[in-house]
Length: 459
Ligand SMILES: *Cc1c(COP(=O)(O)O)cnc(C)c1O
Image (tube, rainbow, N blue to C red; front, side):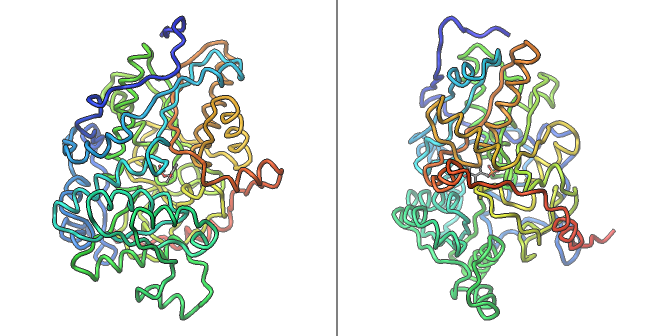
């Protein structure tokens, strides 16, 4: 398809009225239903009541809904309006540097106040909690991207926010903690003495650096033991992926403005939410026979759940408190290397993304750390924006696909999600620029060991 190259548009902007009014639920276009979530004790599918202590009923309904379109409440759109619609850019300067006939587009989610795509779901989740009378939300955060998005959303709707932040990050990365506190959240280093789970860890190891698994256990315990409090998760779950589809729905309209059609859609994948948010509206057209788009999820080679994990039932957290979900997993006890792309260090992957991968509707690629920073710096030096290390994984593969177009002598429209900016990750850039950044090999032995601890499913 020809694009309006003569007009040299670089930015494709929508108006506020173009913010989507409905979320797209890809489950409606599945030929077979997604595998049920199982109770670890009984081995039976769980029901809405099992999740009610942790989530408001409206979100539980969205989690299992088979409706194709779900209305976005006006109160949610009113907040999204602060930064949405987000811009779609044509990366003309990057194209030129690569000498590629490919047309590279990127959707920029770093324009949100928290600097990533995560507020798209944080705002929706807090709204539905408030509607049910919940006054306080507990969550965990690693480097702080999710915690800051939720802190801001809680502030907007007048809810209290308690964030259990992994202790090493709390000590080493104070800036996101300060953001969360500026938005009014209470942040404690995890393990903390505020929960039984935290106390138990501290008794055994007073100097524990903490982990995401421990922080999840603390936040879940907090929510389960207080009537005024619910728990909130920033990725992986079906409703989270659905809230992020505003990204892809906007991008489709913006490509129409560009008079172009995406042939390859790319997103980095940690828990799968920004990849799904961009790609699902495009994949929906593929599932219904309207397009042949290729969608590629990009993960770090040090934590390759899709490309190297097993498609099996596993716990969502490290400790084993959550229900069991069927996903590509490296084993819930697997602890990935301390990558700079902290948002991509998760042992599993969103079940909806995994089902599409298992059915070969999407592709997945794993890329090493140094190569992603090379792509990030090339992007920053041509397009200006300094990307989050997570987003740089998508850039790496977009550049690789554009180079393939060059070799083949045929241009394609490539669209990727620039899920956030890297202003809080400059320490990682400093290491890269000093030549000190290292690659982590795929940890075969650690994964094999972790996969031995997958929960046994009753037949
Ligand atoms: C959290 C985060 C990710 C990874 O999470 P997904 O759910 O896979 O999207 C990617 N990019 C940025 C900027 C993030 O903050």
